[in-house]
Length: 148
Image 1 (cartoon, rainbow, N blue to C red):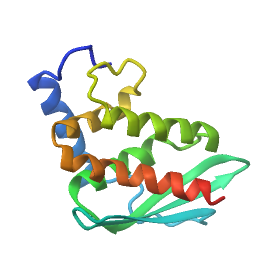
Image 2 (tube, one colour; image 1 turned 135 degrees about the horizontal axis):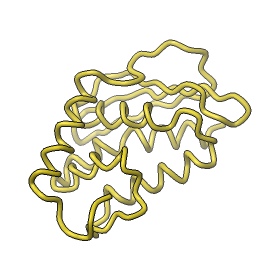
Image 3 (tube, helix red, strand yellow; image 1 turned 135 degrees about the vertical axis):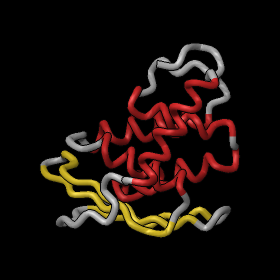
Image 4 (cartoon, helix red, strand yellow; image 1 turned 120 degrees about the vertical axis):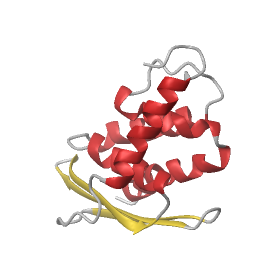
């Protein structure tokens, strides 16, 4: 967990490396499965376009994938989302989506309730224009869920 202080340089470098690793080897990218829910998302500010596809069985996410043309931050964020949310209920997924978006947009450096596996996403907080890149996959997943 991130302490209630600004990210140290070492932590920031670890977070950036985690994002780079997800960008280079994304989880769920162009994954093929039977799709239950799907939504398209666009970030007009940088041109990111993403399609989120979800397979749901009895209210549980059994597969999650994405495709599209997006920047490294958007791609890494989508990859982390695909890795993290498998076997989540749709209700728990919506809570997690809200938590991720709130933490990325927060000006508060205290993130005690933020999932450790997703904390590398906090590295984009220093770059306000990049926040929307990191948030796009999560908003698009929320759109897919709300349409169900």
